[in-house]
Image (tube, rainbow, N blue to C red; front, side, top):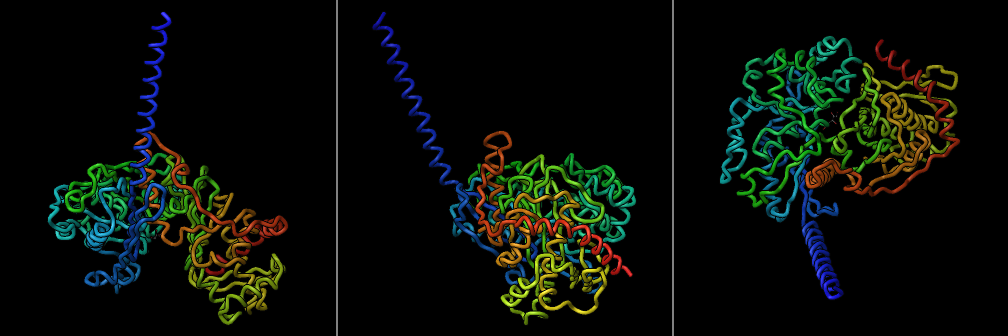
Length: 569
Ligand code: XUL
């Protein structure tokens, strides 16, 4: 009895040891395997195609880019785009140029990276920009010959060679019609996340249907640049992801399905337009394995997964590893852009956009674009400080927080947030009198910075964006005075990221990693467990200053409304 007991015990022990070493061996194998895994992100932006390859620790192992104008002069683009000489508001890009860029980039990748180790691919595309596949194109796409380049096989695959991009602003008529069909801008924003915008793809489609009916009829599939490049990768029509899809004025952002009303208004026949668009998908979804074309031509693994591609702004948010509501990214470049994760969005019929989040199926992004960023700051710096930023900062610091209630608005170009009709500089002294002459230099220098920061806060609040922490990028992120001002105006800490300017491509590669992990897990995995942030704190809010700016806000907002009216006179 005793012997039997000890025999079964030792069997149990042996079994446990074997199982444990089996599990340990399996874990060791998984770690070794994971260490070798690579993830690829593309970014088809306006001027260039970028690619970033990361390992599973999110370290960049390869990056490269191709500038369209330099590499492909035969498309005759300027800064990646074609402008209509007769109508400068019409802006397009050649769809085949994106295909040729992919041919060139894949060859470069093949020379530098062991592509058989790429486990997942995703991408970012210039948002709102479209590609029109011609009837019959799917059969070409799904039977590509790996002995030939993509470009040679797809040159006749488009119903429109040059398709509208986000810089196009020629759809005023279609925007008015769409808003009317919905019962006004707010009603449209309540469903699609934005009032009608000229660059938004739905309005572009409506215009093509009206002006080029034969093109519309001969279109089998309408893609965004993001889903277009994803289609190349899977050799099939790829779905539009819900995040990029919310930049079209057509998708119900709460259900991620096309709005019937929008389909009818834009396409006339809702079913026909719906079939041209396909069904939107979650952004973290694996939409297929890589097509045999790339396996044969570049030695990709047949298990390489393609994760839905998305727009450049959603991908930039992922690239900065924003993880929870209240993470607000402020990009201070030529223009200023705000991106924020939101749980409870308030779509506005006046301004700003609510997009679905690319990293969380139950969350949203608030996005605001301000046209007057660096140019307006530079103008004041040139006028008041002879172009010296050191002198400019010294002047700013000579005037107290709140600028003794002097407020000014600097619009070098007509502004979109808030929407002004014209450019101009508008100054108001402490008692609200409109001043035509510049303020003294220290007041003028502080005025431009306070005005831009207060305007950011006013419009963020309108959209439901309340920062818990602010992450600043872009040229002005090196300016400590601006960082401190943002901390004081918003009342939160301000950080900078080491991610630099390739946030969209980085975001695409992180989304590839995220999508693959969700697929392995057969369920959604939180993005924050995948992509660890790497921020440096640059400024903390000072309570007294925050209080003062909060008190100033209603007056600032009223004056801004007055200025908007003045530009409409
Ligand atoms: C955003 C927008 C631009 C483009 C640039 O709405 O139009 O930021 O996404 O590619």
